[in-house]
Amino acid sequence: MTQATVHAINYQDPKYLDAYSRINALVIEGEREAESNYLTMGEMLPEHKEDFVRLAAMERKHAKGFEACGNNLGVTADMAYGKKFFDTFHRNFQDAKGRKDIVTCLVIQSLLIECFAIAAYNIYIPVADDFARKITENVVKDEYIHLNYGEKWLKDNFENSREAIQQANAENLPVAWRMLNEVEKDASALSMDREAVLEDFLIAYGETLSNIGFTTREVMQMSAKGIA
Image (cartoon, rainbow, N blue to C red; front, side, top):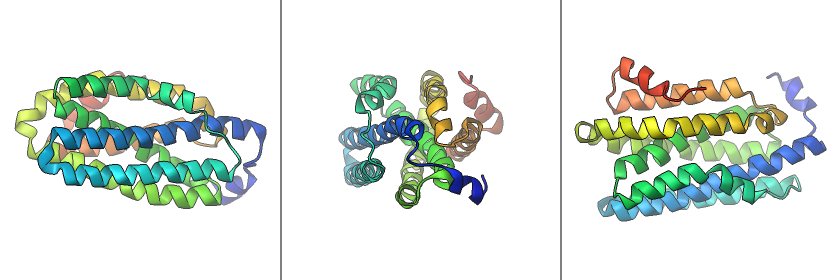
């Protein structure tokens, strides 16, 4: 995306603002969901509660930042859409919580959702309006911290968690693919390329699985689950 192309984006075009109302809602809801999820995991792993509370506070700050991005463009976020967008991940996380399955909770929030967010934010930053770009650049720095936290815990507990991670991946990676496909049209209206988001996601997710302890072959097999 050239600088000239970015300058050509009309951030007040009705089609842009319509798409933005949904994109803005899903990032706000995603950050709110993350805040709730980290507080939940702090209860599940009380020895790490202080860390999870700190991560949750960062997510709360992110949500407020993205609310400001919508306000800056005069957009009302379609929060009903945002909640529906995350419904499957929300349900799966709550089911795992009920089973006291911290591994699945970490895979959903600290791996899949964080990698999804990092990919989307990285592709959005070059085409964002000036106000949103500054907000998003700060947010994505924090998201790497969140990703690294989940990665470290799973790496430290890898031998006991290997099969549970693979199962959680098989059940929840297809959800991420469906979400990516669902948002393609609105993302395109914001000049975000689906294939670029997909590539960035696969790189981040693959590197994370590798760092946790999976072989290259296992990473390839796991990353292909439910791909569409």
